[in-house]
View 1 (spheres, helix red, strand yellow):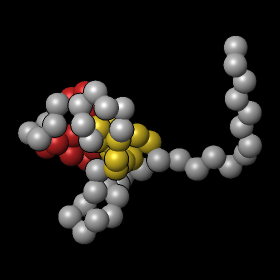
View 2 (tube, rainbow, N blue to C red):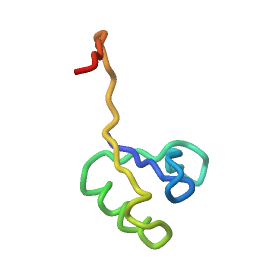
View 3 (cartoon, one colour):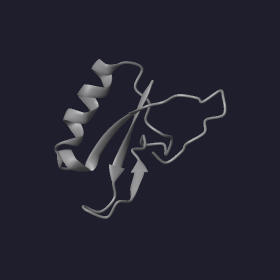
View 4 (tube, one colour):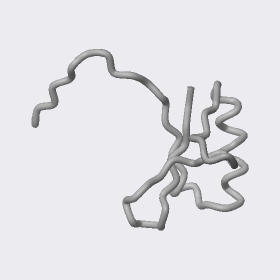
Amino acid sequence: MYSILIQTTPNSGKYSYYLNADGTIYIAEDLTALGIKVGELLNTYILGQIIPIKNCIIQKNIEITEA
């Protein structure tokens, strides 16, 4: 499953989930549906404001260390 982040203001570094009309987070079941929705969003946003993301659940602890 995939969702889309939208940069709220260009070059701001702040993003929010793209939402359905009822206020729920948009979720695409496959890449084809995601591509269609990104194409539609290009009528409103520039490409750099649209970030598709894969929804996943981390099931183990992850340790992040600086290289």
